[in-house]
Length: 136
Image (cartoon, rainbow, N blue to C red; front, side):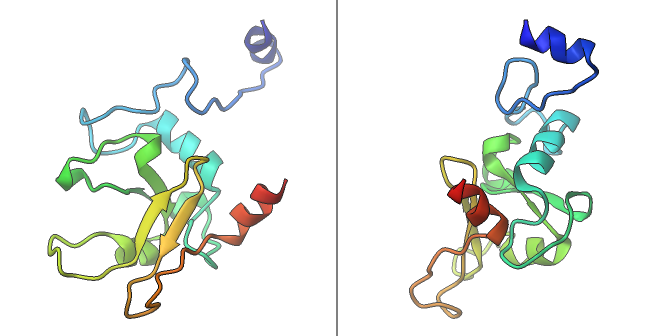
């Protein structure tokens, strides 16, 4: 009923994981679909790298578990990164390369960990926009 009222009022709700939008196309395609991109833009609000303020439209949809390593095209495996930070986080095919890493917390918050050469303890870093959201 509520969905019908919103539709009649020309209000488009963004449903994360709802039955009306497919937010997980698994391995059927590598590039994100329009509904997945809309959900990413809404969730991440731009580059998730701490301190970066690039807006969603300038960001890439990054596969956390790489597509080439069996990763899926699903909201739960994606995060927005600007081209510069995408290059820092994109995993290498060389397993001995120490790179920045990105993981998602259960609530969808992106967590960035530096390589040991930058921080021996690899303390997770979170963009300030997510810290504000978590306090609410």
